[in-house]
Image (cartoon, rainbow, N blue to C red):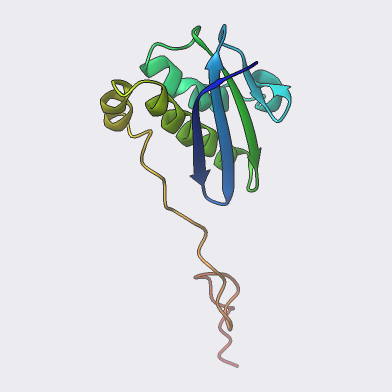
Length: 130
């Protein structure tokens, strides 16, 4: 029987990630695919792995992530947030290092909504004097 050591929910923009941390050898699986296959760009891989690097748990745990919504940047940020929360459940001593690096703070920036009478959220339609 596989037992989850920690479970965390991460959010960023419109993305939501459910993260399960288990004993293992450092494998990270996102939506049934390997981390490097799901996020081909190196910067996104580093974003997801950063909580494990800070807590020195890169080769201790297997991580299973289900993520949906948003784009690739939002999903990477949601995975990082969820993983940090799950690592806090695994060991309370991780809290201070994860908090000081800003991994436990939910990034609340969202896309501003489009307003009526305008081309976008802030952009106006072109003004014509005549």
